[in-house]
Image (cartoon, rainbow, N blue to C red):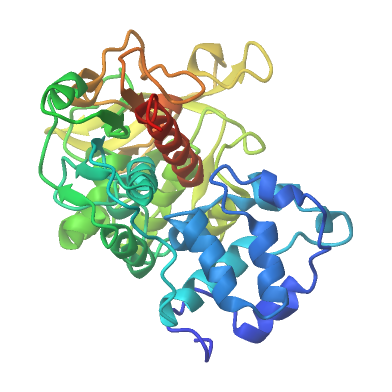
Length: 433
């Protein structure tokens, strides 16, 4: 553990953080800052670390991003700020996520409080869903001075971050530290509370509503055998890992496990199954190895952990005996139209059928909105439609996060929440001098 850190996962000591920050080219209008969907401003906090202003760096991270510590662990920086880093043209991009974790951890340990509460404005705003988008919106609204009530259907806040992200990727302490600062802003949180509809909240006296319930309904393949014992989905399996570790262990220990999917969630499943003692693990995907949507470091971890990739293949049947999974059948596919990585574009290749002997099948092929979530705001499609300000077709009702964009990143959801909070403030400030 670094001598100056209380968190073994932070990674960088003070000396290492300074050395890394000194690699920064100090770009004018730093592209890393414009590349952050959550507006965390990496260019600023990297400069502050470089010049030994560690508390200032902490205020930048935690003040700009209510989930700043959390995002330091889960952000796909290669695709956002790190991907925009000009230092990569010389050698390697700046270790932005490492510096962000260092700054946030330093701030926690030295009592930096970057979030506050504005003077009361006398108006109530409801936020539905305590995942990244909802938490970010609630925090910014509290900063403005609104009386914020956060409704969460589950028994704890955090959304997928708490229930589905493996602790090896996101230490619970980082999430809880961010949540504690948000709660300290005076936000009322109602857990175990389902909302019937945004219109009803408006009727109850809320001046505006932000809807961000996330996507909790796992998709399932329409093939034979999916109702057998031993078939589950990524949301349920990863949640089980957090809520009942023994049950999750009993499900996979000593068994061959097939994970259907090639994205980040699928890699979370393979990693969790390996940690719980699964025997052979297969990752089956329609995409080829060079097309997998999972991040490179996630794929590298899976390879090191001995995951067998069965790429550019589809599962056609789950084999059962006495109602229990004993295997699956599949076949190779090719794309009818190159570059269109969608199931309807997959063409089976004759003579390529195969069988895998497995005792557990976990589907990680995406999620949609639950029936309850879909009823909160009237919508004609799979997701809630919004304009550029995150406003829905209902006056005073806004939405963001996965329920709007589909499964996305934590930092993008944070950005949605911040943008919606600003739009709500503009809406409620009309005619107010």
